[in-house]
Image 1: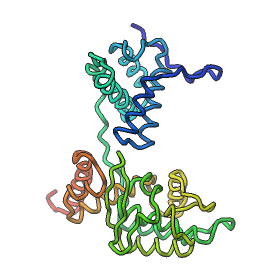
Image 2: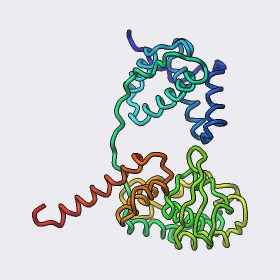
Image 3: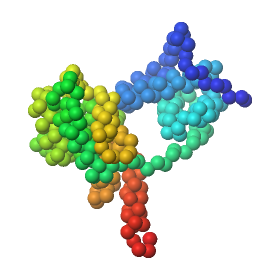
Image 4: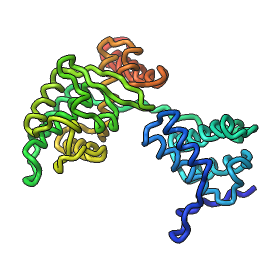
Length: 311
């Protein structure tokens, strides 16, 4: 069977057809699985993407394995990364598990489908010296005259808390003033699957947050605010990191997640046990955390090769 080409987009004049099963699945994710809005949105888009790409495929309950095999082939032919492909099919597999459990589907068409193995990439991270250089940048970069005077203090506090507690980008942006307890030096975080965890906060981060709150007059509501005094958006945090990176000597591209990688690796380098790091990161599985041990081993091997006379 010759694979069909993926259409670039739906015609503007054609509205997407209603999909009651997909809608029921999203309701299930949100109300019963307590999935985050981000996860629900991603899974919904993944189902819609399959329908857009394979418009002649039978209905969800009538599909066999062939349309999904063809869809997989087209994604790989288009040059999509393995991580993206696996994410799309994670949504589809979760959906079909729901159909088997809740809609009486007998045969799961995705059960026999083999996906490409995930790429094993070691996460990039910053050294402690690079962290210090980055965190000093907000007070050295010339400020936009239209920006509030407290903006550098806010940016420094954002980065300090990121690295101090190893938070995800979405977790940090969602924090409220009430989530931070300076007396116990902890922050309450609502992570993936709406699972709550309590993370320690270091003294430098607490002091940076205190300076920012005092300068900006933040007493309640969102912890980190924009110049319009609304909750800061995740994209704004990403952009501020990129802006300050340009004013450093750090040679790597920087994303908020690299601060999280650095947090985990520096803890392990200094003797923290893997299970504790898993709890701090909010990982459901220990295997997700284990990639950081590989980073630590690689750094030890490099140090050995550089220093040992018979390496």
